[in-house]
Length: 155
Image 1 (cartoon, rainbow, N blue to C red):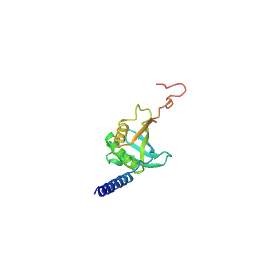
Image 2: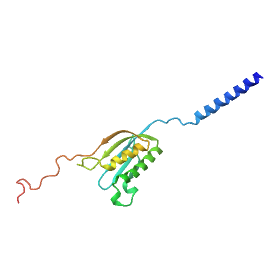
Image 3: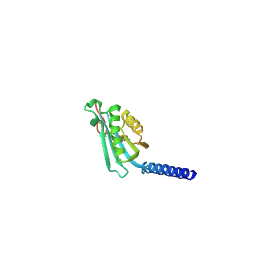
């Protein structure tokens, strides 16, 4: 009787081991972390984003104008968040898990704007790791020539 019990126990242990090994096989192994670069260009009128891979090939583009038809809303943070959700979906489709962000505002502006901040926040909510944020906003140097010529402006 005890031999039969031992055989039954061995069978159940073997079955349990097989079930566990099958579950481990079914689980996806974490794929290699793929890095992308997201360029964010914010202006007074619109927010434009372009997602590229590390080599610079464009994977996806989105803008505030694609998310809404009302031109006064294209530059708002809410619409920028909607566009960033589309970018996040495309990034996950291509297997991108982390991003380098390149933010550009208007030339001479003090900051990139509230729409860029909203994009960065929504990307972090979408489980995309932000590696670094680089501000590419251009600063004016010198500006245009003064009016008036060599002797100055005469009134």
